[in-house]
Amino acid sequence: MADPPLYAALLLIQLNFAIGAVAAALALPKTEPLTFALIREVCAACLLTAYAVKQGAPAVPPRGSRALMARLGACACATQVLAIVGLKLSADPTAFALWQPAQPVAVAAASILLRWDRPDAGRIAGVALAAVGCYVATMAGTGGAGLAAHGCFAAAAAAGAAYQLVSKPATRRHAPVAVAAWAYSYAAVGTALSAAALWAGGVSLCPECSSFYSVPLEAWPALAWWILFSTCVNYALMMWCVKRSSPTLVSAASALQPPLAAVCALIAIALTGGAAACGVGGGRCVAAPTVRDGVAACLIVCGVLAVARSETSATTASPPAEYARVPVEGGA
Image 1 (tube, rainbow, N blue to C red):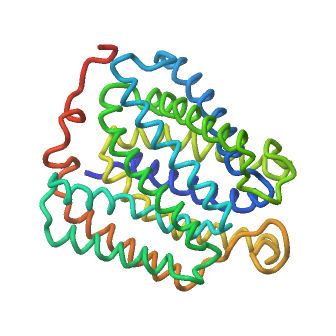
Image 2: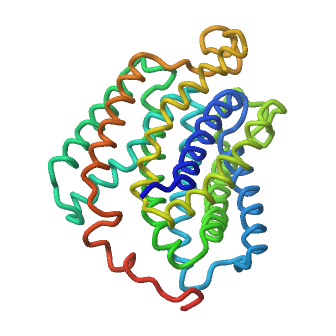
């Protein structure tokens, strides 16, 4: 049955991510990525928690749900930090977006390997097509992203798939906005520990930055977008969409992200008269999408569609017992 509010929310989520990727690519050349991620997650956790408390949820998760929320927070932390580091290394929002549709394919592949789903022809074909698309995306010369950046994007996509799988039982126990708030609180702790370890060791991911702790003035608009839209709005909407549908459908909507990111990158380059394109001038830039990006996107999206078409239900056949149990909220 058609659900216009659900599909509108899914489209808005992908558009927010696409705009955020372009904004981050322009903002990160002189910004320490872990500092950027830490400020983003602390601010987002505070805003989400304040809203959740206003809606009647507790500020901290019940004892019986803390381990689940910690796993969800670890997934959120890995997703955000790896995505920002990858954008820092590449300035290529299209390459970042290319990996997002791989999430439902990764879930399907894992389900087959773990024997939660039957290895039917549709799923196998979808996994194979997406794998070829990912290979094309990582070939040398794709946009501005090298192998290290693609590795970050791939790991971020895997963490994002895990986030959506874990979020389903979480939203069955608690309100979606409370789940997002608690997850980001744990994610902020994880990012803070990672940043502290680098600070203590004197390791910097931004050699050209004037300070590990400073954020240039031109980076604050992008940081504000990531806090308000790419995090608060998107993750609250994502939890609502997962509760209303399934992790598979929410992941499949990420197929919209590559074309949206490519369009946003081209708009950013056009609005600056081409000055924002990497290779034109120094400083901040965004990599323009290439033909190879388009080929990779088509293969990955076809893989997603093949997997989605083969889905006969929103859940796997035999999920782990932990994710099948739904204890009463607040229980030990």
